[in-house]
Length: 88
Image (cartoon, rainbow, N blue to C red; front, side, top):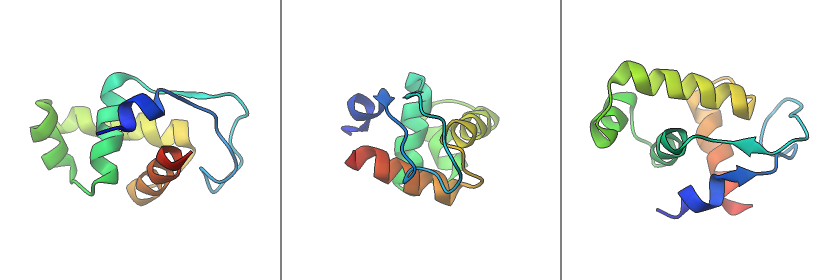
């Protein structure tokens, strides 16, 4: 998918998160980008783990990091933020 190139460095704006976000750009690791793409597609952690060839616990670690970076509280908000970042 095209998200990898689009999301490497994306400036944060107030539309991305429900709460106030930092003014600096977001940086994602390659695996975080893959997990973000999968979450946006609606896959479960177990499906993401299978797709990426990693443990489900590792997916959870990446999800936690994504939630912190995007300043959101749940995977639905991560998926919404991913959609907004892809459109930016």
